Image 1: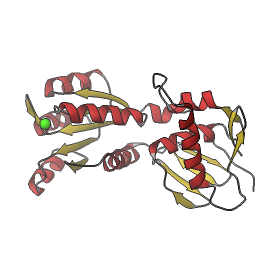
Image 2 (image 1 turned 30 degrees about the horizontal axis):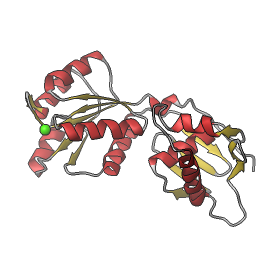
Image 3 (image 1 turned 135 degrees about the horizontal axis):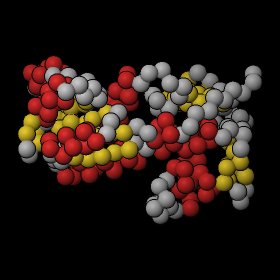
Image 4 (image 1 turned 120 degrees about the vertical axis):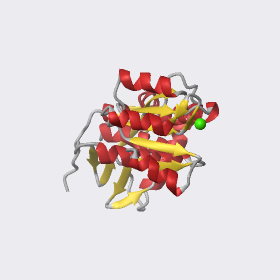
Length: 236
Ligand code: CA
């Protein structure tokens, strides 16, 4: 079978913009940091007024909206946006998780509702679902040697079977899938998956490579990657 590879610019993932509207400092900071690590471009507003300013300035792919805000109610904000034809997908995050509140939020035009407390994985899954729903059919799949990596749904299949990867493992595999067959240097790979201001332990890449291999090189004697001593790695 001929290895097939359809390449896409990496910006398709990088370009996804998220606005967080959350007044709780610790949660807001955590969300901003976590989502940034998952390659989303994130802005954070702590009040209704600031959220309005952000939205007036630019488009977002997803808005994460808290309900209890210091200068108003998230639901009022949502109603205003919808009345003014702001159609960005809105995910409500709230400790108010009564059925009535959910219905009210959805009636006002929210696309999804996630009660607090939630796990980061749960939130990421909801965001991906929203992005998937709203994105028109874009080419977003990289394929090589039986590996299929879907940039929009953030899923990986190997020989038709789903492979469960963490966000960082996914990012690592994506780097290789963008350049299949090429020997990639350790520096190149590290720069792609870790922000340059991170002080990265040199062994960390090896740890991640070993995890990724553990998940993909499941058939005995079948290598997916080749270690090129002193240089880096290659996706075969
Ligand atoms: Ca709040």
